[in-house]
Length: 195
Image 1 (tube, one colour):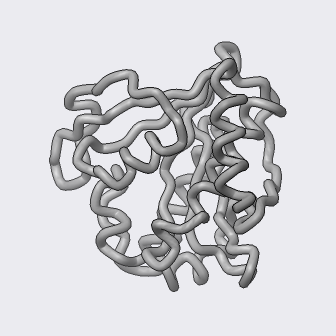
Image 2 (cartoon, rainbow, N blue to C red; image 1 turned 180 degrees about the vertical axis):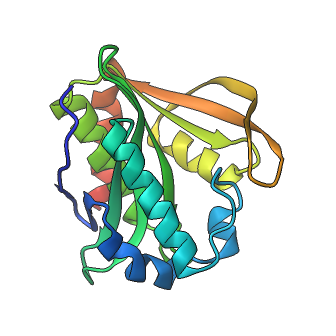
């Protein structure tokens, strides 16, 4: 699995390598409390907080653990959120898609469907993954439903999996899509995107 910076172009969004240059656009849409409530990073309330968060993702990318993307709305060319590959296991040919957030105005739109389609297609068809996983806080019903809508299979719950910035001991629900399930998932996503 050769994980490297790449731009993925979709119907509604483009996923481009995240950089500090995206911070002003991201700050314009990404400082709402509800975006960060279930994230492991704690509150992101200022542009400086967001810049520090981006720098941390870029540090993890240099270690080879993450590949972060800015989600660019095709219609405007503005960054409206972020997503990434993480927990990359090259020898096992699997990775996780996560750390995803969008500005509130772009939630419950085709933005997430298009983003996940691009990431899944690249993972299975270019990187040769046999498994792509997702995790979400069990309290985050919206994210759980979005993952299930993709066609991911619920594998279980990691109890007290993470201690969040506020001290909360988070249970994480784990889902996955396997390479032999990708064709059916791809077909469903393409039908939605082409409506």
